[in-house]
Image 1 (tube, rainbow, N blue to C red):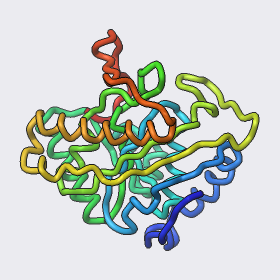
Image 2: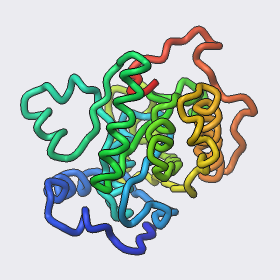
Image 3: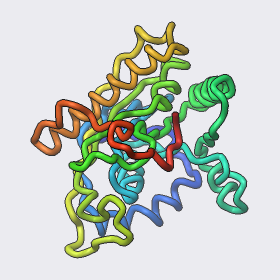
Amino acid sequence: MTEVASRSSETKRPSIFWPLAALVIPPVSLIAKIRVRGAEKLPREGSFVLAPNHYSEFDPLIVAVAVWRAGRAPRFMAKESLFRVPVLGWFLRRTGMIPVARTSSAASARQTMKQSEELVEHGRGVIVYPEGTLTRDPELWPMRGKSGAVRLALADGIPLIPMAQWGTQAIMGRYQKGLSLWPLRKPVRVLIGDPVDVADLRERAGEPAALNEATDRLMNAITALLEELRDEKAPAERWNPANHGQKETGRLDS
């Protein structure tokens, strides 16, 4: 059951999200029976950074539907190159998706500050996968996180909210090409947690040690939520691709 105290103004007033919701939610709801807990943890108004775990190419749809049902418009970070694609670029801009590009450290810091200021100015939330790509952990636990989500949150003191979802692997497993549609309405559980407290790190937001500490806090919070959903403990050591001779591809943050 989805807990919703009230819907935000951005979902109550007409927007491009309305026809999108009408197109996306019915087929996703036919495929997955999504149960959301902790919907009240998302602010009714104002900016936020929502950080989910990531182990299936299908889970962005699960996350988007869960966020919409929780009363907020789902906006993701997307590769800057996609914004230059005809039609798609127009759509991404109209929905307020956030472009991200691989840049130098100085340029990246400026980009993060600008994006954070725009989130606050427009009162928008953004969904950022802190792992940057599908987890490489063999048991689908969250792996080492990247700093993109915490950089955005620290820049303007934006609430940093962890999320975990479980069950999507039965619909589309990691690296699976197609969907497993039968039986329909496979159960998927979503749990949204309390904001991660990183206020003590804001004054050192440009320091690698502070970013690493904030990222560790975030990944610990996501892992704890997933442990609750799975009713089991995660490995004591988080999976690090660098320690297993693997490259992290498809990253949208760094």
